[in-house]
Length: 207
Image (cartoon, rainbow, N blue to C red; front, side, top):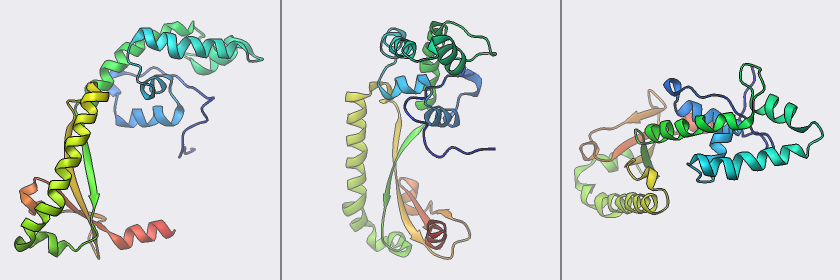
């Protein structure tokens, strides 16, 4: 076994066929660490086959031709391996279209969570007499965050404009039964309230 805790160098670009039935956030994470050529396209805001071929695939082929080993070994064998049979790099273009569709379907099922870490006690946030102050100081600010993110998505990333956005407050917890503990009674669950065990975090951080 080996573990990868940061992306490969930019010069290394990988490809493997992504099965739609198994597509998940874990797969996206692997694509990120391995510099999958489709993930590279996403980071550049490329979502069409035409742009993918023109701005990603063709420049990569031309760049590879300048290497000492030339295209058959570096590009066809190492980067675009499929059943160990070398193929023309353009054979992956149709896969890109289906990948983009599956990617947006997955994203639209997800939620963007705005996490605000508060340095206060759980008792303060659960006391009814403090609720109005919390609404004015914290809740209103969260709504502004959510609104700004929503407007940014609509303007710059319209394909993500349908993503649900919600907020969560995180407080330090002590002597908890688990690392994370939810407190659904806060604001009737409209904004999530969670305590994160401080001793566990400090222990893992220091180790």
